[in-house]
Image 1 (cartoon, one colour):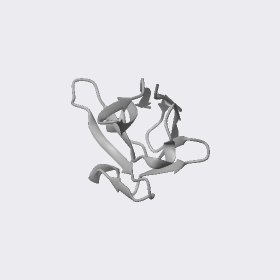
Image 2 (image 1 turned 90 degrees about the horizontal axis):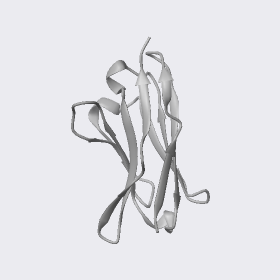
Image 3 (image 1 turned 90 degrees about the vertical axis):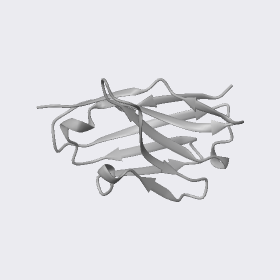
Image 4 (image 1 turned 180 degrees about the horizontal axis):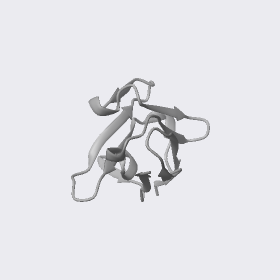
Length: 115
């Protein structure tokens, strides 16, 4: 059974940084592409960034230059480094992958950007 566990969220002031982690189990991590999504209150879940099995990355326009997605295949962990955080980045952040045709999600980690 594939399990994804996000961590690293919290309360941060505008302009601050956070590093999110997503620990995966039950899957051959290195074979898959991975993504970070987020969902703010009252809004649809949106793609933040994705990384292919080969390490190619893709970012939503509003995150380019501020967020960095990375992966550690040995540790089976996905990361999201978030810098220059803004109040509009406040959301629950989720990692996911597509496994055997189905999307697998973690439980999410709350990020709140506020002074």
